[in-house]
Length: 461
Image (cartoon, rainbow, N blue to C red; front, side):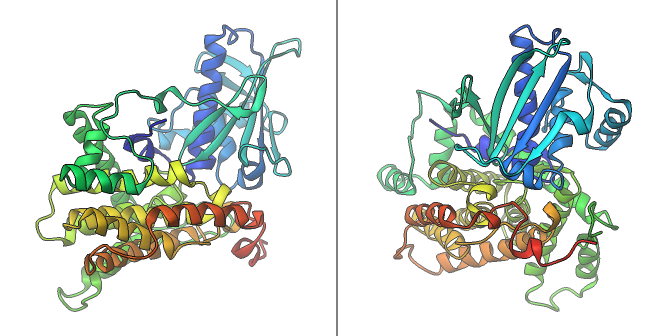
């Protein structure tokens, strides 16, 4: 099984990759199956049940609306964010939807959507069951899907939903470099006298030409920067019961008013502002890049923008090397650990993002493979045990500030690694394994269920 950097970085919409993007993709997969099996015209009703963490925090994460948009044929990469609200309002008020964009069927929100947080599936807590019925009430087709973090979706085997199919996009037979652990990448770097970004680029050539790799990476960076600029342009409040005020725009205005050179730490204030801008756009349902998830999507763009604006000699090639390096670290976490807050807590989201950003920055600042590994390890080591406890199920408190703090932490991790030789005691591979074990030991109320921690420290009125 092989995962591409472009599986780690995907364009989607907020507020959550696992609870919004994943369910939208699952709905699309379900509808595509109906079409392929010749069942679309026979379908008169669709029902979905969100289980586990999807059931617990689905309303706050817009899981239901995302799934409905997917049923109508919308995709996270291309959905019109501004028009989506009006489309959902029409479904709610009219009681019908256009399945696959082709066939109108009755759809009643209270009847056809169920939230069952008490049902925990064996394979993963982010599970949903989709069902299609004929006009006479017969069950035509059902399928279980798992949203396993970062927008990745695994489909349950038909007839055995506790087992999952391996997506065809994850399989390839012609990889120039096969790696499962960071130690593999370091061996390749030593053996072939190549930098880590060069090795990852060679790996990506299994799927794309150099021109396609560059175009894809440039598009990712363009979407990230556009997200930051949108966040900087908007005041007001975020959606949700707490009326959280947007802060990025006012942060930007204050920083721009400071006399140049008056504050030696101003660059770090900008890092936090970049992260706030991205986090607020994500919380508002805007277009976002999973990095590696939506809940942690502010960390990496903030550090990359820091490199682009504040590093002498920053280049487009450097941006690409940053993303290739960070993407490789994300692949290691996805392969050997988890990037799902519902599975391992926020250490698997913000902690992983911190590790990825630290590695990317170290690579473009001239770090060796050993220093890159050290930076990535520092980034995750000091986020071990981080809980996922969003207040009111919204990706706002503590998520937005947490992204800003982790972005600064990533810069610090990189600087620490660059001051050393790369030799240290705990390897990144060991830290990833520790993160997974810590997540398994963590109480479920601290894993994106909004039933513990900060999520219950405020009484919602």
